[in-house]
Length: 401
Image 1 (cartoon, rainbow, N blue to C red):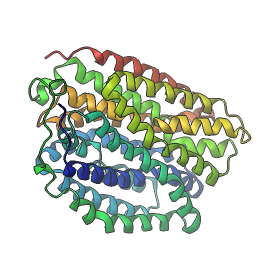
Image 2: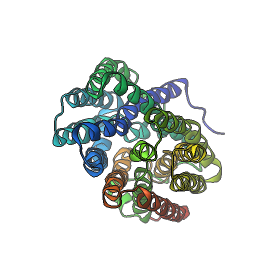
Image 3: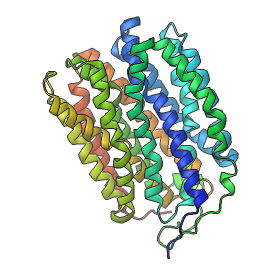
Image 4: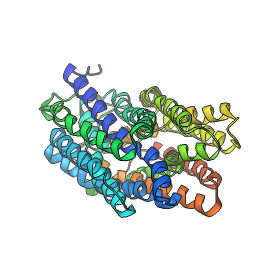
């Protein structure tokens, strides 16, 4: 008989969703500020993408450190640290005057802060509180990333349009500073919450060490999957608004469409993660890859601002699967490498995500500067998704110690 998660476990899951939504929305808002930077500083697309790309790489590289810290310090202290760093980075960004300052503040300070309020911090805790329903719980947590992205674009665009990008940063800094203590308080005593009893088919044979995990084929396959998925996603995500404006769509309208499409990630990610408990992590992930490919292909067919249907298909199909592979990858990692070192193991695997996201975000801008179009970048996104699906399918074989 499957263990029923406690009321406290559901409360912690809700707290993780809220905290992750706030950090994700602040980080994804960069796609709106990118257009403001281009207009004010006359930076190229590659230059404007640099801070975001550095942030993704820093996020990936720092994930093992963050994973190790959460194993020792707990979620509450990590959220407190992350919130302070985010508020500091946002405040400094309001006074930025050069590219290196934006790279430092967003790419390093804010990224480290957001990484302390992310899946790497919450996943080890949630995976222990929801064992039999791990895929569902991970998907609900991961959906915060898509939900944050959905609300960030229209809200940030409205703020920038009304008060300018500098004042928009100041407002965000004030909001984050006010929320630091309440968010951290949600996780007081979280590690002492009774752990769900594992079922026979969900428990690992025994606890894994970091060294043991790294000696398996599955560890490296998971890292590659994360990398390919992030390359495909970030070749498109950061530049969606810029692509739409280049095609002639109004910026506010484009932000609304992209935001609404991203909002679909909430049910999309939850559905994908939940069905992974029934059809397997691999089947659910491959379904998500296929839907994402359709969304990117729709963008490739857009030539002008009259093609509203294609733009909506692109936004909705790409948006509904934003982050949809994340719960499957995270749950698969917990399925394979459970134990007290899961945070560190997950952090190491997340390096692939950071490197892939950094390469994809910067690469799309570089290819645009080289060719004057996002076409090649979007085609490479489709190729990365297809390769990711193939590698994920290889994870279906049992892990060998």
